[in-house]
Length: 608
Ligand code: M6R
Image (cartoon, rainbow, N blue to C red):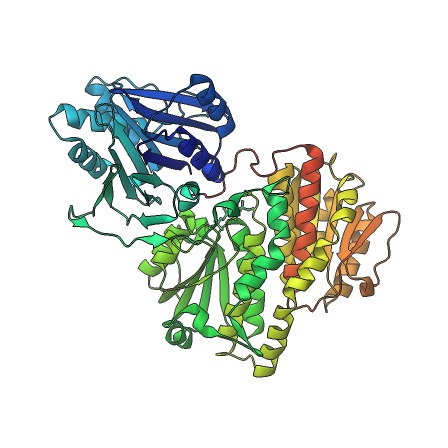
């Protein structure tokens, strides 16, 4: 789960590489490095820590060059250290950056050690550098040496490679991990995704799985898995270069929380007409696929999994049989495959390795069709699915997912209605849901008004080590999402329970040091939830309850109530998410953690 940038230009590319890495830091950030070609030599600078450490080291070095590769790392093999930071080299002639995992690296390493190669790192990538060097020593041309090396590699990877005596030339390879080629006037680039290159170009092509490419200042050559030269379509990114800039906000997470009204409006834009949803948003093949679907299997990870859980409540309430599973579990167990089943994958990035593998497995064992709900149009998941529905959240940089989640819920509601039409949802229900969906942006803005009050309440959490989140029905996954956000960025242990489960065990944990956060919308489960609140109070627990004023939950010494504006139950999971995001943000702020880049995590989990 690393980020790659490479550039071949006729002026200094160091600033482009550094800016590109900063934009890719969401993919991993425990160390970073660059290797450039300088007068027939490779020069390399690497640093442990974030890209800013590398940036200042490069500034001190005064290094400049016209060809170079760069990398930001999220450790998989070997701890974060300068020796393990990329690029990795062989004999000071080959430099390689890699995103992914070379699964057979032990075997290759043993073979290369036997041939006399000394390894300087614990990484799986170093074998790639030495293997290429070995093939060159055997008389292979650079491109041929890379091709032969790739043929030996098992696993999923994206590579960028330079050679000391080949100025103005770079080779890239992709299998299982994303890699794009950026095109500009007299300069060309390689990157993990186009966001890295937006300050210099928005024109790019996406390499297919198994492709190798070679670029120089003036040309690009792509060769597919069979060795044939191919052309890949040139695309133009619509993302604005400043879409990934912080602007007035202190953190990306806060910016992204505040962007949710617009992001949800953008996700619904053009997909609602009058009191109906427009199914065409799912693409021309969707009607036949939905018509033939009798069962929905949702697969996702993390926050996207929580979105899937909410959707399952919606779908089943419309009579659509549905199951939801974490991708890493789905991919490794035996399944009784239901007839006429549609697999729905949900992912912000579209590059989550477990989700991609689970989709592949689902299709292998006989699930009939696939739909991806995703935020990145060029992603692997979108390309691997029969149909897709894009969320229009815009780039999400904060590792803790916020606007991706609420836009996924908006998209999933469209999907639930499309499927519900084919089961037992009538047109009045659709009309009511559509009218509620149209209120979402305004209701989200209202929920954001709780920001200051939540910042105040957060002060009581910052010194706590544990917390419990409770919810019922479709708000149970919202409690799960609230707990995930809090643990992810504040490092406070947070667990979510379906409130009715409290007395089956977790109640034993409740005392004055265990804050309990309850999501209590005004719906038919409210009275049940109130009983659960009493169970907590009776054990000396302290509560923070998110409820609307009409719910009749009064503030007491041991109960704090945050009033959420009244909202229809159909869309309330989306609205009740907002205060929980704000709570975790403010707790993290008080604790002084790195909100956008919490420890040990990365934005896109492109490795298993
Ligand atoms: O890109 P994806 O939606 O597939 O990512 C799935 C999870 O890795 C992601 O939601 C993760 O749980 C977030 N960091 C949560 O905030």
